[in-house]
Length: 501
Image (cartoon, rainbow, N blue to C red; front, side):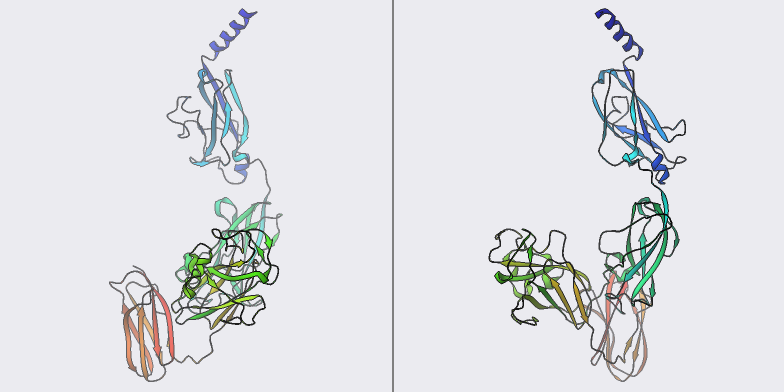
């Protein structure tokens, strides 16, 4: 019997001549249906740690093991011959399409068997075996622009700016069939913008988008929202999806020509919770409450969220609020801690994030690193849009994301002088300014750089009534944002322009 077994083993080894033929198989049906793989133009390969043993030039690279669909069933195969000396060895591999688009998930593995032929199971690319229904949905987008609506720098000016819904077709998440990306103002509710887009995708899948403002030179982040992508989900075929009203996270560029007070108010009297311990603490044991955020007047996120951050008064890394009826606090001892903080002249507008921190007597965390960062878990915080106003009032509740911001507009006054936007803008290197002077008097028109330093004077001295046209040549100046200011008596008008070389 022993001799018979030896003869059988010898016969098997002789048949496959010391080689094991390993066949890889991948089902591309779902990828094809989703439009992620084109049978006519795309290729798919097997790559892994088996390549060198099989005689290839290197592992995990190259195009030797191109897979084919011989019977047109969307299952692609390829065979590699691996020497029998590797029997019982484990190998890793993955499928890759379009030359360099790897499937997701961990590496796949197999162990080489003691057999002339080894056919691996049929696998779905990226393990995506869900055959979903292709649907067409109508998405209605509405954007609330009340916090940014206005004219001039620091605002969304509907006469100058436009707002678009970008995305929905990123990364093959969908196909836009019809509609206009540009949002248009609707009469009711006021200062809302809306558009409708018809998009095709797979039922129950999601697709991402973001808002973008144009011209992007008037906004930070090139006009894109300063946040992660937003998402909408496909529903049944033919459905209309009313996307929840959007509060845009855009950041218009504005530099104030006067100081702007911002009143911070945080209610500490309604069961405040320490985010580090998840324990409610007694507001009667509060030692102090401070605010810190992403602007210089509130520390610019500097410091370590410890007590020493409060040293330095108005230039501290954390600004201490009070409940004593001082510095903007309306009512003493009402557990609403407040402080009026001044944003200086030439402060840049936009979205500002901030958080409060509280120090109290029985804080179990103790005086450790960042122990005052106790309002939200990492990533949480408040935000408001800063732009020129007589007063910005923020009303918050400790540990709550709902923020209330009120903007007291600048006092109405007769604007009898006119400073038009320069044209062209952006410019290189010349541009023209038009000034309307209603009455005789001293008038100046000066240009400043982004640091507030005077660059040159275009008009200076007594001017007669009328329209004045001035041409400016920026030759020799660096590209970037500049400001020009008209001053006449108690009138001051500032505008922004951009030199692009």
